[in-house]
Image (cartoon, rainbow, N blue to C red):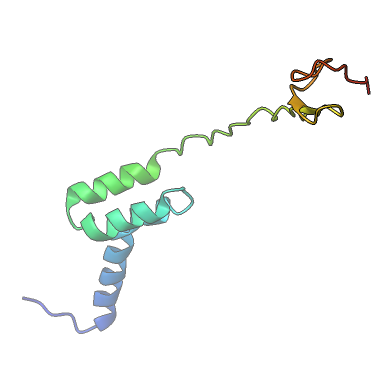
Length: 106
């Protein structure tokens, strides 16, 4: 076995392995699921299959965000209070449902 006299070669090799190992994480940094890609890369990247899955996941495009706009809520008219009997009638009614008295327009 040949030992190198220069320790910087070992550090360079270690740094290169570190960069290659976390390549999927670096590629997927701007994705919505970047934390999940990092976790997969960290925990299963040592297996070749886990590393390839993390790399493919990092290279796939995020689906576009779908913005769902709800229709504006319809304002319901309040029920009408009859001045004669004190009972409520349906909104827009012309006559009281309890006593039959006519409501004033207004």
